[in-house]
Length: 209
Length: 209
Image (cartoon, rainbow over all chains, first blue to last red):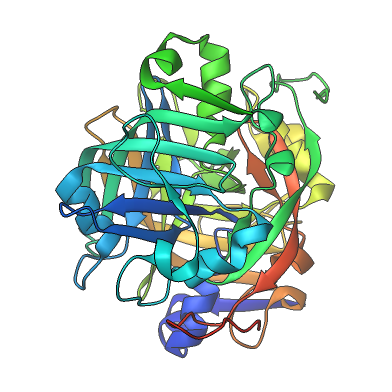
């Protein structure tokens, strides 16, 4: 059986119900902990599921932030210092990753026990235990007219990846890295490979690679 | 062992290698087939991994398109007609979903055998077999200065979801819907739940829900 919601039914539904439903619609989302620090060197760590590929040459990544109408430490730190890190999450510290979303006083690194590490003089903290760490520098900010959502674009300055997950063709085996994916606001999953397909051509059966 | 790439090493790497690596960095990505038609009613279907939550009230979704420097049917159809559909992919038609990315002459629905369906007079085609179908109307377009990537924002007008995957709190069980997630450009995965956590509070152990 199929359940149907039209626009008005979505608008008139309970706000908690609506938030859960709409946050699940896009499907499985990437999960990264973003590490930052403010001008005084105070560190911050927070989970984000709206990070996406913007370009490979030059290499860039985008992050969507909820409207900047309340205090948002991560966004404010990035606007102040221009630097941030992305850190994949594994099942071993998935609970601590979720816990960084609480309204802590002080650094989420210290409070949740996730140890920070600085590498190659990059001026933002990485999550030591993460198998994939990316250091980024802010290059553009845009604000959406429809709801003041903020889109930040970062240039990729450093990649640190556990070699076991790096293939010869440059792709990453996220199953081996054991990266976690998130659905909705609060549900975490492992990935299990179905298939990898070659470049698709018309009228030619797809081969697996 | 950790492998390190700095910005210059990324820029100087082989273009195929770089594209694979950078496309994998964000982690597992959502996968949707976008259904559109042009002003003549000719339909199009294409896979997208850069679709993300923009807001729940009003409900909106964003899509990032590669720079509009070559013919891009999906983007052009959306700019012309304003309407598009999002359709989750399951393992049963994952191969056909990938195949829609080939440079077909004519409609990918017909060429790949994925049947289209029109529902509730919505003026864009859905994928009949998809367990989660979303009808969207274009409300905003922005172009990124850094690389002319196009960001389109859609208002969510209709949701059609298989009831087996809809929970009482509005969240979707993507494991039950059997939605597929993608890594990089060509690798498809199932999700396997690790845990769902309650709203996080400081100094209180997290409970599972």
